[in-house]
Amino acid sequence: MSITENWSQIPMKICEFHIPLKNKYYLHMNYKTLLILPFFFLSILVNAQESLNFKGKTYPATQSWDFICENYALSGEANVQIAKTETGGLLKLSVATTDPKLQITGVAYIYLVDNTIIVCIDKKNTEAAENKTANYYNLSAIEMNKLKKTDIQSIRFNITGTANKFSSQIGNFTAVNKKSYFSTKFDKTKKSFDTAIEIQGL
Image 1 (cartoon, rainbow, N blue to C red):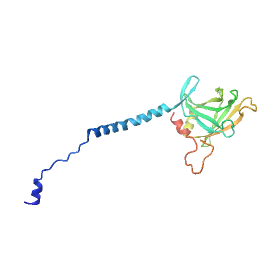
Image 2 (cartoon, rainbow, N blue to C red; image 1 turned 60 degrees about the horizontal axis):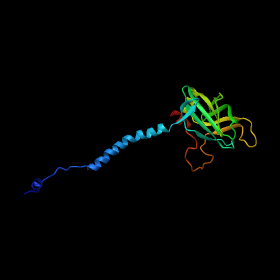
Image 3 (cartoon, rainbow, N blue to C red; image 1 turned 30 degrees about the vertical axis):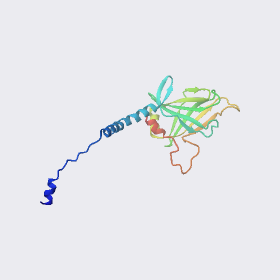
Image 4 (cartoon, rainbow, N blue to C red; image 1 turned 90 degrees about the vertical axis):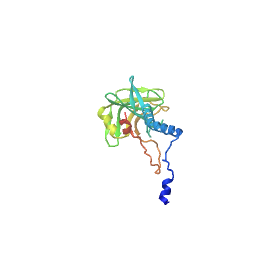
């Protein structure tokens, strides 16, 4: 009898691949998890979007950026927020203050990184609280489009009122788009806020 004949007489079994029921369950669950996760993160992003209330209406808005304001001794920063409205947008500019009678008034200037300027006219939309003062400036649709394309570099504004030796300052101030006062050459993270990207998302 030849070798080939011997092999032909050996009973052969078709190889079968079985997935245990438990493993099938986990595999099914993993697929479901992969499908659900994108919607989960999307819902977080939607729910996390900021809003801004103005004259009884609520508008989608960016986060409130804390711009560095070195010459403002009380807090050293100004809070900047942009909202999208039916006709364009809003700039909310606010600072801490010791007296609600000290207010942000007059023209504000938004300086962009492409060396262009947006002039914001004071419409007397001021807001005063015990420890904070704010002003709301209207932005046109054209100005909002510019803000979607180019980051804000700085904002120039005025605080007016009657100051004394115990109150916070009045005068002209510049809020700069910087996340912190100090950084090292080893820190490679971006030092400014991505204002254009956030405004695009409104």
